[in-house]
Image (cartoon, rainbow, N blue to C red):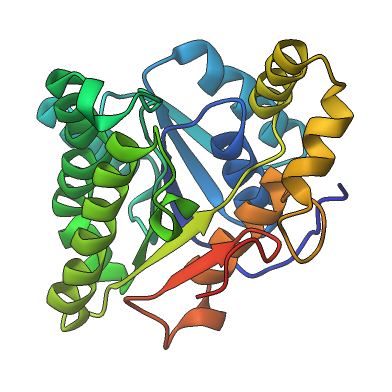
Amino acid sequence: MTRLKTALLADKVVVVSGVGPGLGRSICLEAAAAGATVVLAARTESRLKEVAAEIEAEGGTTLSVVADITDEDAVRNLLARTLETFGKVDVLVNNAFSVPSMKPLARTDFQQIRDSIDLTVLGGLRMTQTFTEALTESKGNVVMINSAVLRHSEPRYGSYKIAKAALLAMSQTLATELGEKGIRVNTVAPGYIWTDQLKWYFGEIAKKYGITPEQVYQQTASKSDLKRLPLPDEIAQTVVFLASPWANSITGQTIDVNCGEYHV
């Protein structure tokens, strides 16, 4: 997919947590293509270096900070490093999440649910609390990455839905509480995202049922209006829109990006 160069985030400092090889990478690259200076945060340093190198190869400016958002000191250090280097924060993108257990709730370990909530919900809250003062100064905004699991109750997604539903409720409340400070808080809820991880998963399903990965894709995509699955860059472009001045009157909202799999 061709990356569009715009000025939607020109002169903005965007902090992205949960930078990995899939959506996190795309968010960082699309933000940079929109003119932003990007601060990359994740627990794995090698991933940060890889994505930062891609951005810098295109002339972008980055800062990489190893950070575990479940650790208060690590989050404070992330803020301090960002302010020391760039002097401000305009956008916070909370993308960190944990892989769901994919077991029925009756057989899901409670500690797995606790860990998921600690990272996805409380981690997002910790990040937002820590960055609130800086975002108040810049009249900035927060974008939470949620999931289309909000729109269904399919078996084996229960623990994931618990965490993501709590994240949505928290995001809506933050939008109300932080609105008077001029801070917007919005949510992007992707459906399936056509990444290498999903390609691998479809390959495993294909082996199990004796069909091809292409057939698994077609069967899955047939449930959507556009008969295809979203690319990570398409999710990221929605994040850029919400983070930009073009969305200055949008807060407390959720944008679903799923090629029409669900209608809200």
